[in-house]
Amino acid sequence: MTAPSEPTPPGGPSAVSSPGDASAPRGTGRLLAVSDLHVAVADNRPIVESLRPDSDADWLIVAGDVAERPDDIRWALQLLAERFAHVIWTPGNHELWTLDKDPVRLRGQARYEHLVELCRELGVSTPEDPFPLWQGPDGPVAIAPLFLLYDYTFRAPGTHTKEESLAFAHESGIVCNDEYLLHPDPYPTRDDWCRARVAATERRLAGHDPGIPLVLAGHWPLVREPTAVLWYPEFAQWCGTELTADWHRRFNVAAVVYGHLHIPRTTWYDGVRFEEVSIGYPREWRERGHPRGLLRQILPYEPEPAPTDRTGTAASGGSL
Image (cartoon, rainbow, N blue to C red; front, side):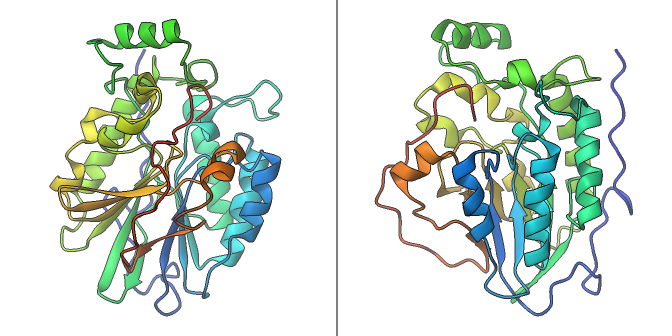
């Protein structure tokens, strides 16, 4: 099968918004982030309704897993877009699921493109748009929303191939629902789609002005290290790709934002700050609370004391 070409972002692959664009904030606000809102879960909906900026200049990154159905995604993003100066979205695996009762029957790339158009109707930036420039106290920072997927290179312990790793997961009963609900059409496999996304995104980052720092914001972690605390290590194979392991070193990165693991925390790799910003499911946040707050401040950076709760509260397989 011939793989399709990726959509060309308006303005070209290296375009960014200029400081005078309409997307620039009114005054200097904060750059905030959240992910894994899961608004189809009844107890999570009031959490989303409670999310508000401190000022009309605050921006918000939404790093995936808003919901599964486009109508729920629209509800949440429209609410947030009405409150924040600018919203940047990137998909998680749940947005890409095609559920039996979903009236939107699109799969794979077509489903993703449908969500991109939904976001554009709301004025929300996506991975297919120019990187918006957030004006901070130290100058502009480009926000790069990333849609990358995974390629099964974060393999289960003791395995050496995708096939071995998947077999290990099936034998242990820890299998991500993506295997049944996330279709890669028209790519042959999810890992083929991942490799295409990585290549297209890497070209955009390489063409970006290195003098303007980047915040890399995606659903899946760029490095494998955050998955080391998963209760079920075989679940890591649905959590990223080794192809992005050096991006935080290769590019001028101010911070990395991700979700998916449902383990909200701050970690540092090679001197670069990584922020996991997920809300997660009620069974998780009821146990651990929201030790970092509902919205994580990415910039300006204000160091926080380390949380006292345990950090290894990763969900079991199947539902992340």
